Image (cartoon, rainbow, N blue to C red):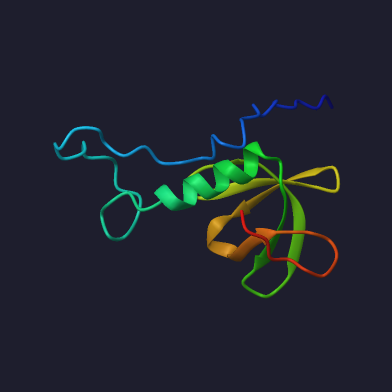
Length: 113
């Protein structure tokens, strides 16, 4: 079985994943609905995941039942994230996640991103 790895491009620290604001005063174009509210609501979420992915930050994913999993985010989409943990690729559905934060490994798990 051959393994395929996708190289994640690195960005400068100053180029954090930010959502671009429209430059004109016109209403933004309508996008596909992804949430129950009818509007695309994942701008902050997308920026957060993109930043963690491009920085190759070690994160701790805590599931709804409290079980933690430590790894590096390798990809994400509307419904799931791909986590590299202990040499395995794990597909995690976002609906099963309680929260995600940086993992520092010394008992302190909070850090400004």
